[in-house]
Image (cartoon, rainbow, N blue to C red; front, top):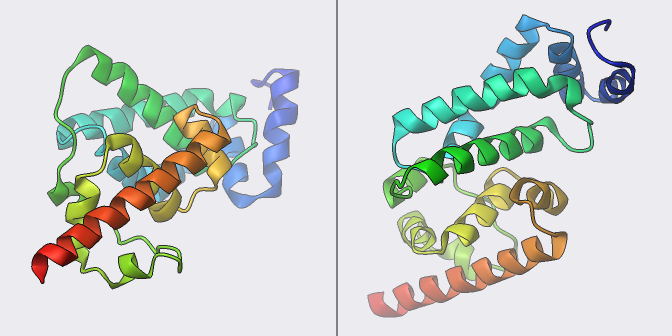
Amino acid sequence: MTDVPALERGQVADCMEDPEGELIARIARGDRLAFTELYTRYRLPLFHYLLHFTTDAGLAEELLQDTLVAAWQGAPHFRGQGRPLAWLFGIARRRAGKTLRRRVLPRTDAAALAMVPAPDLEPEAALLAGAARADLVAAISRLAPIHREVLWLTFVQELAYQETAAILGVPLGTVKSRLSNAKQALRRLLQAAEEAGK
């Protein structure tokens, strides 16, 4: 650990309590095998998340590589205050935002959303649970991007609200509000589709 400054050594040492945190601590010490494990474990969730920002799979792959390089370089600064996946999503979001501010690209389409595993929605949303997957994917694709993103992070990736807030760079209350609005909008879209199909 001689490469890591004293303050950061304490931060990295705190990560030892959980296996995912230990993985980041090993990367902080320059362990290439740990980095390979990180890539294997998180590349697909990161890639699917990056597809929320662009339909260009090649660009999403470039952003994924950029995210992983930033994670390698930033591992000594990981404070262990959240799960590594949430930390990686935060890096990916910032990298995507920086790149896309320079470029105007179309957002992901319903076909890309169909590749994402179906989320387990809360019991209160019985209507959502009974909807056909195709109807659900179509309805989600019609949601505002901020609503699609918050649903994806909380239900598909099962991140805690606090982790989602950190990734999005918004207060916890904003995450809860966006999630509530997203569920209401999704419910309205599904009900409209059901009524149109009768």
